[in-house]
Image (cartoon, rainbow, N blue to C red; front, side, top):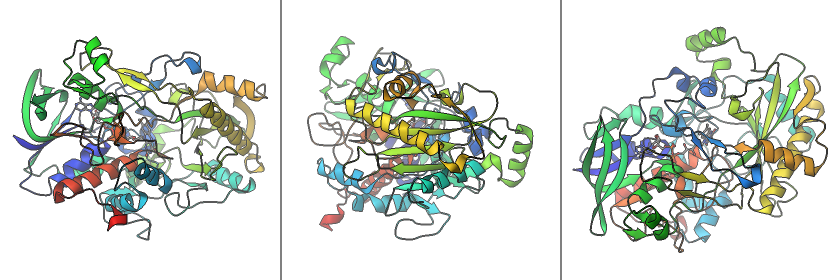
Length: 531
Ligand SMILES: Cc1cc2nc3c(=O)[nH]c(=O)nc-3n(C[C@H](O)[C@H](O)[C@H](O)COP(=O)(O)OP(=O)(O)OC[C@H]3O[C@@H](n4cnc5c(N)ncnc54)[C@H](O)[C@@H]3O)c2cc1C
């Protein structure tokens, strides 16, 4: 019997395990479907290109055919290893915009406004620049400046200035807009995943049991209460009792597990002959993601990361934890308000990569080049996760319905146009070769849209499939408890009612900090305005 069973040792699960076991009287079991994070490419930041479709540490999901993207099935990597997706991600540390959280509060989630959540971002953080109004030191999550940056990333920031955008040294302070280097989740040049930051320091605690290659199969019922979980480990199915089960399997797996346990849209569960314990129509609905388009320019000089001397880089890295090996590759970025952003808030994010990036880096191109990723930050299209089998080992049906909403099409066009303008600035004159993607023959919006339909991919931020709220489609309340049920919460990226305007790792870590605090202090979720 455990006080808590946590499903998934990813960005959220590792935080929960750390915080909840600080009290030696609280017994916690952490189940992780993947294995140990021993792979050295996890820890050397530039090794991320080796992880994106690694068979053993990645769920390697595929979406359903996307009707607005020429019926392509898009590749969706997700971490299946200690640290979850934080062990394979690009390490960009971004919180989003204050208005994102204020909007969640307006949607009926007291205690989730920006003033309420900022303390929990700070609680996690150990920022290499020191503490100020927006940053803190001493937390388990190390946030640093990059130790190595490419000259093309500097050219990218100069390009922003030439277009009249401000330079922004800190996207997580008062103003998000502008061009700058990302701060990264690294400690002394090594990746700081949720596992290395939160789990490693506490794994010796007697009250914490971590089971690897242990996949949760279904929640166990006791009337209207969840009493524990069934999981598969070492070739057999095991049942364990818990005071509370915390689902942190991520935006794809958490709704899948709920549905397999009889919690979800009744009609859909009937179709799979699953007993409906709780008809919750929102489970798996409200899927949102950042769709991304890459503009790729050939470089006239061999200054990019395309043809690395891997042995020299690796040796230098293991000796110094610096140099190219310490780069997260997506070194610089920008937040821009397009002409469609009537409220003036940035609605476009750029990630600059001083290498040729096509098909998640799986298509290695000859020669040298550089890439701007461009995405629309607040998409209107909504998709869903559905079961395609009652076997928990089979992937669910993933349908993000990208570009279902015309506003998303218009915004993606604006994003692609801005990225091309950046590429065309004098800042890149010394390096500019021909445009490879979309290529000079792409001259008008019709052609640009055809290019987007042919080439757009995910930038890895699926969220929203167990959304927090109080309306009919909400799955969890503002304390992240599943509506209508005792004994189970969802604590991961799936609880976002609306996608944040930025990357999703730091917000997910923040949710876990906030809920852990609530569980430890047995308090109501704190609401700053009421304090
Ligand atoms: C390639 C890539 C690049 C990214 N780049 C960035 C970036 O630069 N910056 C950023 O902020 N965000 C980035 N993200 C997104 C960010 O990492 C995720 O949003 C975040 O990690 C999600 O956290 P989570 O806790 O919801 O899920 P995850 O971290 O994915 O954790 C879920 C964990 O649960 C485990 N699990 C699932 N089902 C079960 C089960 N049934 N039983 C047991 N265990 C289970 C999984 O194996 C996994 O370890 C990136 C993501 C990817 C994939």
